[in-house]
Structures are given as C-alpha cells and as structure tokens.
Length: 258
Image 1 (cartoon, rainbow, N blue to C red):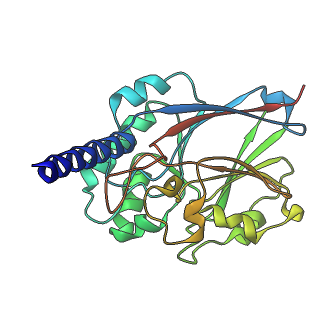
Image 2 (tube, rainbow, N blue to C red; image 1 turned 45 degrees about the vertical axis):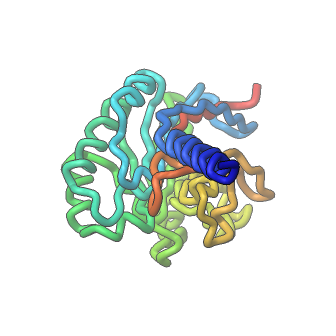
C-alpha cells in the first residue's frame, strides 16, 4: 500500500506541475518597462510601445486589450503572429483587437511562413498593418527630430536584409530595430547607430532549448553597440506549457535621460 500511496503522490505532483506550466503559458500579463537614452530626442517626450511577439496559436484576450488601451502610441508585432494550422479568421480577429490599442507594425517570424504567407501578407495589408519588411518607418517631432523604426525579415530563414533597411534610412535620428530573432545583434556594429533592438523568438527558454538563442530569458540586455530587448512572447508552439518563462506582453516607454 505504501508504494500505491507514493505513486498517487507523484501523480498529483506531476498534475499540479503541468497545471502550473499551463497557467504560465496562458497568462495575459502586460509588463511595463522604462528605457532611457541620453540621445533620445527630447521633442518626443515619451514614446510608448505596446510590444507583442510569438502569438502562434493563441487568441488575443479582450481583457489584455482593455488593459493596454490608452497606454501606447503604437503597437509592434515582433513576428510569429501565426504558425501552421492557425486559421486566417483567428489571425484577423487578433489583428482587429490589437488595432484597438494603436497603429500596427509587423515583422515576419519563422513560423509565419508555415502558412500561405501570401494570404497572410494580404490580410495584414487589408487591415492596414505596416509591414517592416527590410525597410523603415519614420516619425517626426514638432521640433523636426526623427525617430526611425527599422524592421527586418526573419533571420533564421536567411530573409533578413538589414542593409536594405538601412539604405532606406536616409534620415538621421534615433534608430530602433525590430527583429523576430535577437541574433540580429551579431550582424551590425556601432557604425549603424542602432540604439535599441526589439525581439522575441526565444520564448524565454520556454521548456525547449534546441538553439543557443533560446536560452535568452525575457528582459533588457546591454550590448557594447546597442540595447537588446527580448520578450518571452505571448503564445507557445509545440506544447502549450511554460516553465519559469511566463507568457507576457509589454508596454515599453522610451525617454531621454534628464
């Protein structure tokens, strides 16, 4: 009987542990961050970005959107909006909800190419999503200062062309680069004057670590030539479980050192 009791205890423990990991994977959390730079253009005051990556199969929760409304100037989707098997109807609904927070910008992730990416591209354009496909968008303050949002296609699939995005960037200004994979930081130096990189892809390690970049937990990393921001991501792939890397979205406030 003792062995039966022991088996029951182990099974209960395993069940609770799986429940915990499932709960971590289905959170609707907004983590707020302030990142200050001495050269951030003062004319913008503060710029607030709602950043979400790695949605995958998840349906964006209305409660999450309600939390974020009025708190962000723009919304950036950092890749893996979809993956194989996700219906376009769900993707469209996710986009519609995120548009309630603010204007949408998008970069491609590796899993986005698992569906018909021509259909996804058309869907994004129909919903007025600005696709940063190896190109840039420019914002200008009343004082004429520039904030430049660069975006590259997926690094893991070899579709990134940072050189094209930079060649499209004739203006001087504060440069933010959005890349699904944080490994883009190895492809530039101080010369490109990129102050901040926004990325996801790693799932904060989730519970699968097949590639060295997957060891990166969500957070801010100071590099010699840039500041790297990595998100744990909102959804999961393969298994809907997380361990010590809860699902998250972000409101990132950028400002000048005073």
